[in-house]
Image (cartoon, rainbow, N blue to C red; front, side):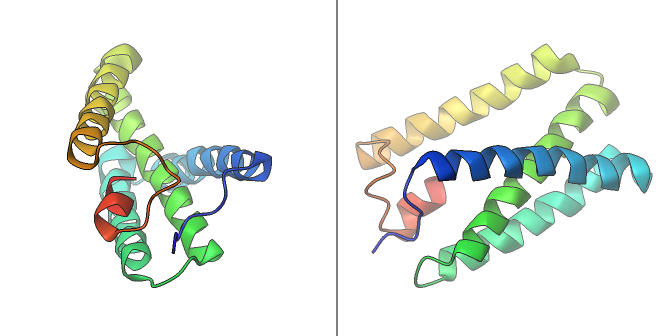
Length: 131
């Protein structure tokens, strides 16, 4: 049994909202609460890992848990990107290139270890982790 929602127009609307909220939440922590991008990144990556492990250990699809993982992913990712750009002074182009390279490496590993990048057959913890 898949623990993922169906990919519909509603899914993409929710994904866009989660990404936008992720940007706002990351800025709240790093800029408004003034803890900086490095500390914010560590905190939000920690939150992401907690939600990810919870999702991986769940036995069935739980919409609240699934969307919490998506939200924590976008929040941690946005703050990490800001850290690379603003604190490390890598700029958006270099930071994007680094993150894109990591993503492509994950896609390559996923494809060569599973034989597909299809999200329709995510039924094992290993493939779900790659997703």
